[in-house]
Length: 253
Ligand SMILES: [Zn+2]
Image (cartoon, rainbow, N blue to C red; front, top):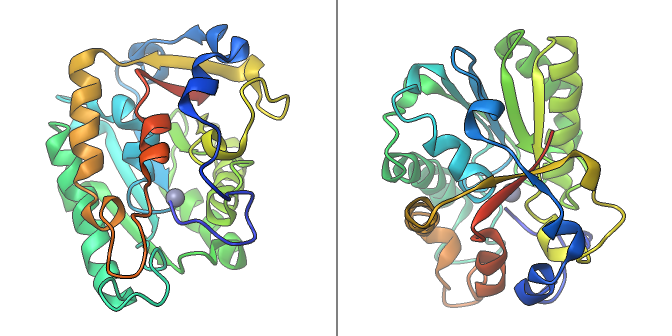
């Protein structure tokens, strides 16, 4: 998840303690994995950057263990723009590294999802909006009727997350697939009882202790994002990780 200067993603963001005191969040009803991805249905995850799939829906993914034949991962970008100007994490290195981190994270979640389950679209990181029509075209080729399609919320506050979200909303409707949107950056900029959040569509997929621990390990597989380089702190700060490693995943259905 790559921050952009023009996005509302500044400073440390809303503290975990404030989210924990949110009455709106406390009132969100749970949803089970089998309700999200019923037996016999395919799960299609459309991730703007290599890490969004684990940050936003590691629990949904982990629940597909044994059902890997029904998983399709669509990586919109290779995440090459996460470290502008870095001498260590150059764009060419990130293009190689970040997809490998994604694959490793899924293996750590216990999923046998090899390259045959991935479609890497290699659209330009931070510039997906300029290629949105092309993205819609690719999604229309890949999504089938009845699929459960999970992607970043179309109002998530990051340009790539929103462009991907919009494209998925359109393509899923065209293909009569079932849409699930996931907030990632909204945890940073939204307020605890924020009226911009579609609370009426929100559900919680509860993660037990074991699954939450597994998610933490999978997130940490994104070494380029969780470690500082010689010029800047980690992309995924402690505050980001606190918010994204709560004992549930929030989805908009
Ligand atoms: Zn992202």
